[in-house]
Length: 317
Ligand code: UDP
Ligand code: MG
Image 1 (cartoon, rainbow, N blue to C red):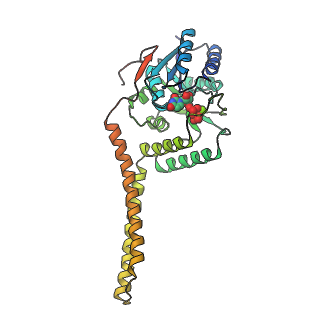
Image 2 (image 1 turned 30 degrees about the horizontal axis):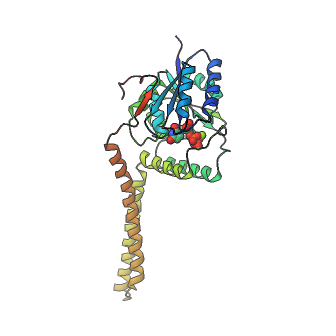
Image 3 (image 1 turned 90 degrees about the vertical axis):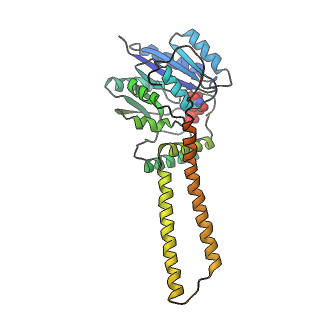
């Protein structure tokens, strides 16, 4: 029996690229007819004609399925929805804008056939992105690597092939603030890498502004490690120790050398400094408390407005 491969494509306002995307996936499926293919288009609350195009594609080609989310839940949620509805023995995640070239997919499948459960694409160039974005990305990865024991490889995005067991593992993690890049690593399983050149977006524009990327990075850090809390502790200890030494210094100066300290400027500086540090630490704690607050509500990650197929199974949900 042929193995079934599901390609998941999250789509948010992608009316300009969907046809091109489908055409190249169609080509891929034609060239690799040793597999049964399923294309899972997830409409992530688009406000343009994306859903209409998706539906017409599904009418045209029986391999195309779709899930229509009730609003824009973000790419991470859209991908989870795709995984819930995917029926394949493995799934491959691609972006609608074809920045992840489908011609790498056969190489991924080959790795999968060799027994790897998680074959990720790593891009070798980032030419299409601004210097600021590249710098920030680098900084973020360095911070994340320093902060957690998980190896989140730079240059690795969501372009990857996941075996059914990885998919089921990811589906069992129903957390709200999904930082999927970290989750891939967290679930484990045998990994393999293929490299590719990241292409320019075929049309339309990136859905992420620099600000959103920043928020995403911050979320990634705080939802994946508790290191910032530890930094607050270390900072607190260091400052207390400094303050203690400073106190000794003044004590000695006053008692032994009979030289009373000039109070006001030193006092105000120390107070402001400590106040700042305390607020910062509170802020960090607050960030985590906020996450706990959101997570304890235990809301579903997404809602579905309509779909052309049923979820794969409900045991892991
Ligand atoms: N996307 C999504 N929901 C969102 C934002 C993006 O489903 O809220 C999809 C988008 O349609 C695309 C993929 O995620 O298929 C990557 O988005 P984009 O190309 O804008 O990101 P970039 O390549 O700039 O990181
Ligand atoms: Mg893109």
